[in-house]
Length: 203
Image (tube, rainbow, N blue to C red; front, side, top):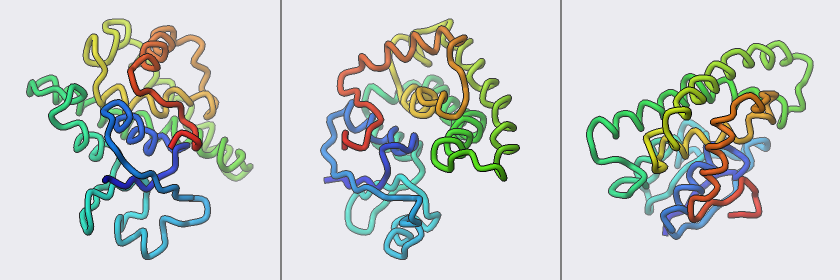
């Protein structure tokens, strides 16, 4: 059985919980507290020398880290990862977008506000994330005007990776009221069989 080391309130970890639930993959969830530096313990760094969650334990001595790499691994040969070369590349395109143009703004602002309590010495950094976050949200909004999900009528790993932090973007100070297509996408996403809320009780 797979083991997942993570925190359900982390968007990157939540991605893994979603794909595992959607595909009904048996697994054990092991909570890791990043605020108490559990990821820097030697036992954790043996699994991921980069000291970050999530980590997927495939079997003894075989681990995988980086959330989108884990998503691709678990989605291989399933409906969540296209087999067509171009469509698969589009799914990857949105994953790279999420990591470089979305998460650094939306997830970081959420972390500063929700987890750190918006300390005075990070207020400037927090405010600097707003423009980039809204730029990412605007690009998503435009795509979701054209299709139900990011690659068409059915969800893929592109949707999973983008949903994780977008649906809690307001916790980072991003109002989603004007993004009507994103709101509609949220409504469609929660109807996917196996959907689970971002809650530590749902492990």
